[in-house]
Length: 415
Image 1 (cartoon, rainbow, N blue to C red):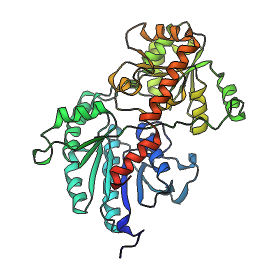
Image 2: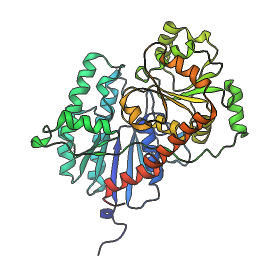
Image 3: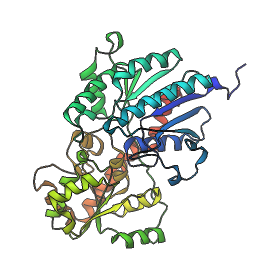
Image 4: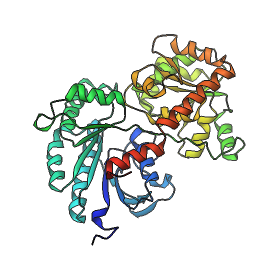
């Protein structure tokens, strides 16, 4: 007789690849929501690895409902979270973190006698080491899943030698995984076009498509909420008086183009940038654009209060999305779910998600600035039509409830 809640009945899933929970990155948002939606499911147990130190590291004091176990361990959303210390070794930190997390993962599986575990790695960073861990995980009776991300080797922040490394690493990671979970249809097509016939024993890679998600509800905060009004006063903003962007402050998200074009536009609204500022990149932008002289442009810091952030999105006049590399991006989904008017960089990933529910711009001079001027003069009926299309798109294809159910089915074989 099998006991209902025995170790064998629980599916343990080890999540590797997010720096922290509560951050603005795609994997951080994804893990936060996945553990939230499954926190009361007794059939699945998540183990999450985070960075203990350095840029973007985990600070669990910013989260609600955390049970601290030790300096390096805590429980959040019923997930067991472990912080990995990473030495200051430049761009190799991410590789070190993933390898250290894989070592800790295998050790935990052995010591706890966990059966049929799933190790889910996000991003293709550790290709040179993956064959070893693929074999080790299989020896332990487990499976290795991969989220191949969206062309890490194309990101502008990397030098040519590092981009070459990412490309080769991607090839190895796709080969030595049992399932590649692609968050974009375009990424899934790319995986098969590039790597069919190149898996273990010449097999085609096994793939499935599961996007990221977004909330379909409205913020719990009202327009007159003291927290919201205090934030507006502090930042010099008013409801419907600003365009917004929320995301990581990295070159491939096209902050330079957005700021330059905004400065050229005639709008009297502000441009509020909610991001974790990289001072080096910020200084580079100031030297090229001299944006500090434009009082409309406001770097307003980070907002970790999710209800407040949702309300800030809802009250924006429009949202800019300049992400050029990657799959289905959480910040885009959240904007489509919350913001009335969305102005997106015209690339395949973004059109795949928004279709005709948004306006599109290119990196050509004048494209975004002219679109901003047109958006300022747009009539209510057209804005309402775009908003309704965007909300319906999220509800039908990208709600977190739907996405988390799909993951549960892939992880457990049950709905």
